[in-house]
Image 1 (cartoon, rainbow, N blue to C red):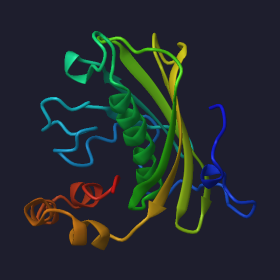
Image 2: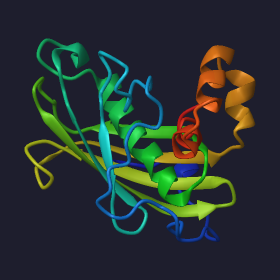
Image 3: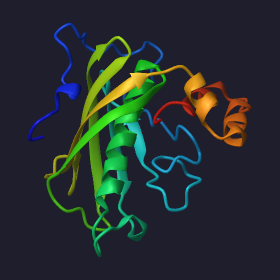
Image 4: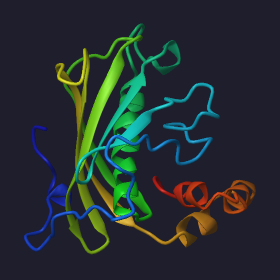
Amino acid sequence: MTATSAALTPPADAIPPVRHPDAPAPGELLGAHYEYCFGCGGGQPHGLHLEARAGEGVTVTAEFTVTPDHQGAPGLAHGGVLATALDETLGSLNWLLRVIAVTGRLETDFARPVPVGTVLHLEAAVTAVHGRKIYSTAVGRIGGPEGPVAVRADALFIEVKVDHFIDNGRPEEIQAAMSDPDQVRRARAFEVNP
């Protein structure tokens, strides 16, 4: 990134992130946090269908294929879709900390165009934690996991209680998620995004 704003710079007394002992094992597919999430849900016909995997420490890797539904300029991914892919990948990190958190700030840099048909390879890591604030960074590459950088982001996530979603979401979706008998899926439904 060319310059990160002060809001995304961890304070001097921030601590290194600690992977939760019950976090998914490195290499494990994290799966969708909610079936109808535009970023990772399989129930969204035009969504990203992004697949994230737990990495070492507090890192994740993810991939998504840019389809014609994701284009802005003819034949190229829309910048907002690329920002969504970064946000989704960064949000997946919170599952390794086992906290519910929402995006507080996301700053993106677009380094090169991403053509339709491209697989975007994403890597993200939590860099610091300060109280309820979680600082993280991500990069997206084309042409493979070691290919040229196409997009970058720095983010600040804020840990929240599940009430944040219950108080602000549509009641029918909240009730459906809360009624899911699978405790992991129920918890993950409230994982990322405001």
